[in-house]
Length: 98
Image 1 (tube, one colour):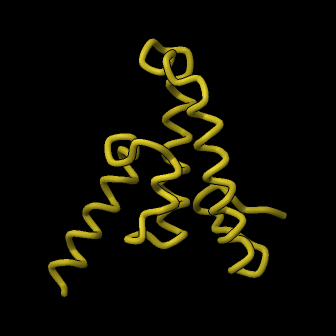
Image 2 (cartoon, rainbow, N blue to C red):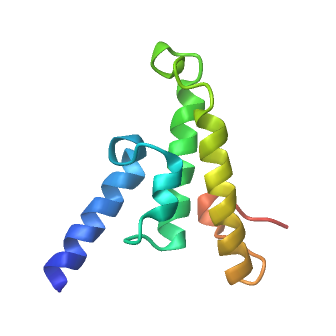
């Protein structure tokens, strides 16, 4: 069981660093049962940051809807996290609402 948990932890860390290498679409993050909502939020926040940083570059020119898909998926998870934490998402993810 410990080996499985370690593999899962390494997988999650890799997904947080390079989400588009692991997932084809942001919705795939939402469907991945290996993740909890906090992990999903961190992965999607990282993905959003990467897409925003690469906007206008040639490698993203063929993906016009990608940012919108990532933002929509992130907001969906953010709402679940916010409602499950009594109205506060983790400030560490830059998602705190006041």
